[in-house]
Length: 162
Image (cartoon, rainbow, N blue to C red):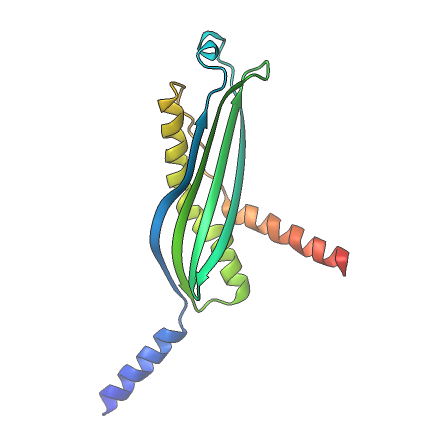
């Protein structure tokens, strides 16, 4: 009897604990374009890289979220001719329960993209190599800092409209 009560208490405590699990990682969209090929291969290689990152999330059902990390790399020459554009939307499905709103926003806006980024980086690098360009090794990204900036911007906008 006492053992059964202890098991029930333990199960109740686990139900209140935050839960996080990765369900699936997949490529949602993938694109590579080299508009100046093959002429671009004859030019001096002096690349300028412009990298755009974006995240979005959707609640698919209660406690199940899709997070999509979009990475867009545009590489130009010194003369502003586009060498290539590589884009990937790396997505994941995450089961998340038991988090307060602020912690859930942080998990969806920073923690999940942190998990997805290595996959997106590999996909971009693979596309670039298949396009016959030198590898594009993207540096690690501090999603916590980006999320903090986003939250600060959101708070400033809310204060400006109030």
